[in-house]
Image (cartoon, rainbow, N blue to C red; front, side):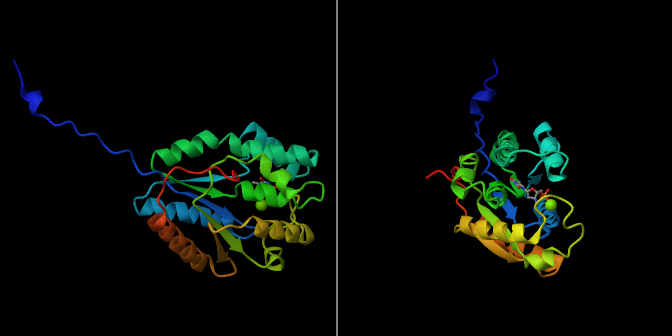
Length: 223
Ligand code: NYM
Ligand code: MG
């Protein structure tokens, strides 16, 4: 009889620490997509797994409808487009949760804050009503807000090609963003060079990763 297995110790691996949920926000043409991608590269390059996501995710059927709304292909009621943007996030909810649980971080270019700030910039919709459909999504560990004078953003390439890319509208969007801020928000000066902005974002992310307890993620806008 072979008793050798009786002497072996069974080691149970500890579950991986969950990943960080990092959201990048800001008005149009502030460099969010460029910076989000650079952040993913930075983390993956230093052995911390991270994935890139963006909203709207124009690749899903709901995202296709959002895309044609933004390019003025279809008109939709303000409530309808708001709920579609929200549904577009909820359809990625399982992926966000499973990625974080696997230990990888999720870097998201726009999130529910864009949803509320843009929709509530239309006089027909109130801030509180807009928050309702995203309440319960995971609350980010940090929101990095790319802050750039709106007049400067308006001079950047292709500004004005989509709905909402208009100075007066963006001013209301900015005001709404400021009303949504809490202590997880960090303002980043986006008028600096791409490299300088990148360094500030990396520094914030390092700080969050060091300080965060990474307990269970609370739901957004649940009080
Ligand atoms: N936008 C984006 C919304 O109005 N609501 C949302 O929930 C989200 C995620 O869509 N002007 C607006 C902001 C932008 C536009 O975004 C398209 P992007 O990041 O340029 O693809
Ligand atoms: Mg855009």
